[in-house]
Length: 633
Image 1 (cartoon, rainbow, N blue to C red):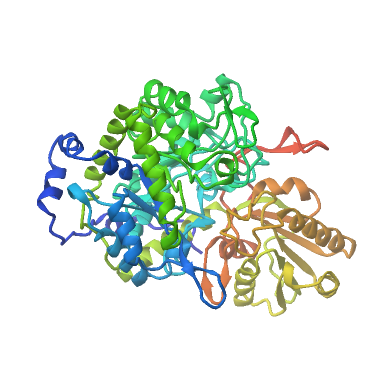
Image 2 (tube, rainbow, N blue to C red; image 1 turned 180 degrees about the vertical axis):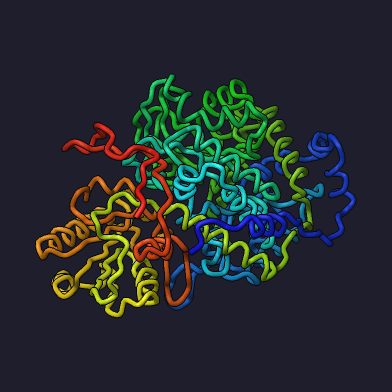
């Protein structure tokens, strides 16, 4: 059992991940000039308006063209002449990569090397970004790279092990692995304070509902991520929403005092103590306590302006009041909160007038004939600047910040830090991943059932994702339980589930999370239909109780215990649902939970959030499980 890493191993990990790769590429004269003191203004003075606007745009090339037989969009795994020309001709400042672009280590390094080699003017390099939060927001190939459990597991670990070095080491390893692939920007960490347990999109992506704990853990990750651009998100705070901004426009109705004490606290504390992240990403939310001005959307309705389009929030509050001097970027502008409500050209105009530095994914270019969308957008912005509708001084100040950040992070033309990671580094990273999973598992209920000792007992495992059950089954089988069956809920009919329950002694059922959105899961199985999964789990539990079976509940989100409280014999919060898929270990939390079931691991995680009882309208009432709660077997 690994409950902590011995100090010698911690030191080994620290040494392994601290070593920076040596860049063998020679810089051009202009690249060297960009690295000299105060040179951002010199470079800026020599840039055309179109070059400046290009630096303020980050595109995705998730797909390019369509399969001739099926008509399906094809994943972009290498850039072609069309993409290179777009990046070069429009002076684009950055590209974001998704799982569609990231298939294997060699392929990723080839792709990022291609991107880094795209000709750039003035020695300016290309930001190559991805979302690598851990948990379900993890774009690298699982099984090849360290798939940390996510933010809320770190919160649970922190509650039980407040002096742990593991959050810092996670940041260090994440940065090392990204840089080894030639990726220089990580849109992480999430610093939303998840104060709404019905939040459908942040949920376990948050560290905690404590602003102080969010602040502490975010800073530890940022300290570890020193070799990549780090990014706090989603400003001014997405933690108290009931709606997923991928799908609609959420609204936060806190008063101003609560806003400063909760949502803004992680930002204001880090900025005030000179530990601000390199970048801050906006939230596509309405926040009337911070800006109640109105804007007309496409259907003619007058609504509260979204934070992404608000100068009061992004400039007056973040820059002037809080004093942030780094780079700001929008959340993806193709998300329905924005794209369903506003014209794309007007959005970019408002984004730039709000004082935001980079527009993320303002248009989608997936084929040669779609390049015109980008051309028209840039032509429009140029005209708006020339006509005084967009402030040219704001554009210059924005580009200066971008150039300064690129210089600081060595993002220069022709530069790439891609390199292979050694086996020693991989082994130590895996130990950190396992240790974090082990120390996050939280025991919420145990009515004299755990640990499981009698290997003759028949067990059935029923889970929304098959890999949840496969991981638990593997551990139980290895520990001598000889009659263990595992089934994915969508692949076994209700009558067959009943037969499995009838013949077993113990039912282990897993949850996905009531609030998980299909977008959050990259469209994978289990993403949609979270409510029906909850109904299925409730039916399983009710039937098993009537048959007088012992029941263990494994929760992806600890909040879900409210739906099943008092109906099971044991409840473990895992904060994750990735496990074993086709012999690939895609995450360690389910393995850790299984070891806790059999007594090999003593659960030591504590709840990083308060869990509230709810009334008939699902509104929170009194606290049922307080932050810091957690049992031992």
